[in-house]
Image 1 (cartoon, rainbow, N blue to C red):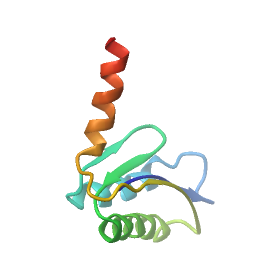
Image 2: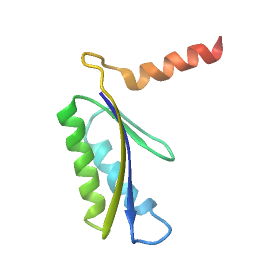
Image 3: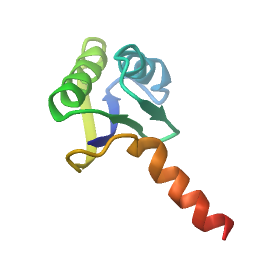
Image 4: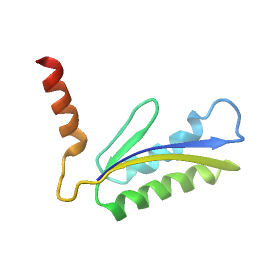
Length: 97
């Protein structure tokens, strides 16, 4: 499965990058395939392992922020691996056509 999620600390001021870095660090340390952009971090793996990483990332931010907002989107396709890269390759194929 692919999970794209965003963790936003609330009540910490306008700049949240320092807090978001705590969440991204958890994801990168997980060893699961992942990608971060300006709005979301996407992780690929099995349901239980991906959701455990999301929870740990949220917990890391919650440890320093009085409130946390989470947005999550999941693409669940049993038996599919390499989707994080594969979807982008398919898109680039059609963009190059």
